[in-house]
Amino acid sequence: MAKKRDVHVVPHKDGGWATVKEGASRAGSLHNTKKGAIDRARSQAQREKTEVVIHRRDGRIRDSDSYGNDPFPPKDKKH
Image 1 (cartoon, one colour):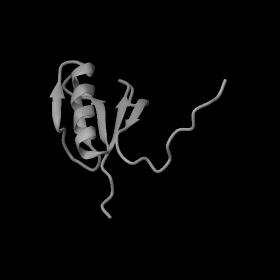
Image 2 (cartoon, rainbow, N blue to C red):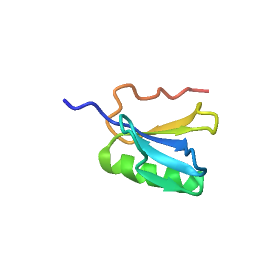
Image 3 (cartoon, rainbow, N blue to C red):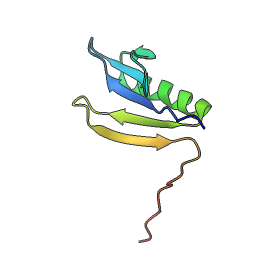
Image 4 (cartoon, rainbow, N blue to C red):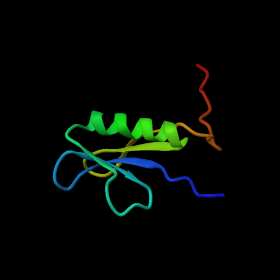
């Protein structure tokens, strides 16, 4: 079975934001806004049934969304 390759939204060295597939040596797409990069990454992840990992400017992970068969789905908390 092939390893899933998540799509990351990361700050680009020349400014703006980029989408990068795990294991890739260069960006898949470049965007002026973070929202544009997130939208593109989400559509790609939905198509490929994988995960989007959104980073902050400092490189830390801000959020992630799964669009595939998640082997460890989140458990909802009951209040």
